[in-house]
Image (tube, rainbow, N blue to C red; front, side, top):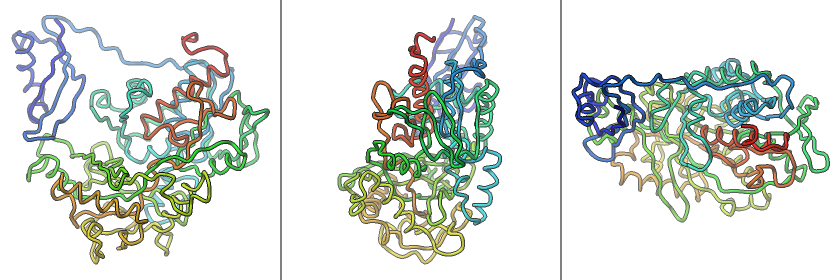
Length: 527
């Protein structure tokens, strides 16, 4: 007999099969010794009220031998001699596009401006030691994209994008823990994701695809409104039947290149703000409603907050429990911060982006710069956050309560940001449409989560790369650029995704559309 059992348990009860086996047996109306197999299918935590509840969905068998659980495998056939499709960018959009192209019998040529994960680690280590940023190898550029060294959260709110389960299966197949298949908010971890990304690259190469690092695309080859390939910064021309453009939201040079070629772009809404960091113990106390914090059986607490302030959204973004703040700039005269968590989430700090919705009409005089005005506005805020002196990796910071109250911070609490911080009046120099909304937003969040606004917490500036101010428009049905045939804008950089999971899904869908364009067949025919 097989049953799917839903249980609501205490954290301790959910921690050990021995605790909930009798409950499963009772629901199945059998003796505990008749249970032959149990498997957790889904797990989530309901911390909205006390007591905290862990929700489990369990597949259980009684008086029957369970079927053998087959490991999910993927068939990546030899595509060495197949039609070539260029994929620009080795982030989640690019790598998932490449793997899907291989499944469909196409040969991907992946071009990445940055380095592979192992070499990239060395540049990040130098950056965290206050060395100058490498403009082509940093937290934004390089194999795996921005997500490789900034957490690895796998979550999307959209149910219409595509097959989220397959994304999890691909990551698991390439080395991610089985836990991502059952957790409500799966997370790989910054420490483990690089090896998973490397394994994905090896799958591409073993199937006959190519991955070229230190290969920066500087131009598109277009003939009669049809893309025929790309030009690299070194002057090489690489030809392909189509181009999947998955360059990420920080590749500003791509937007300028497209604009200079009179290729259509659109200004869009995005978000900017700060990164706030609390002691993890404090967040545990607030979220788990207990001065004892999370205790022995609960993970580091997370939060998700949002509100409307003066007709603009203010919300948390990329919350990293048990994590670290890292320098995420891509140029030497700017300051950008981001967050990450290792798989165990065992840092004593919790950080999150806290950002304000920015619409094209909010950028003042930068509207005069046309469709790229948002990029210029973004760059200006990053320059304002730049601390002049040394290599500029030191971040401006302010106590959270001081930020909300408009006071100077003469002392700063300890932070996880390794390069160091310097006291700065962010409440004063942030643009009013962002700073004032943030201050009011934090005050609102403190009413929902008492103790959230405190000088034990520190805000660091700026969190500006949540998404791009520019969209590369594409046709709703074909996914091709509205103007250039065979060009498939993809992922965060194109304005059609927001995070690892949604970018991966978008990469797969762009690959399918590229296949249909090149082969003249539908994906269903191929299947």
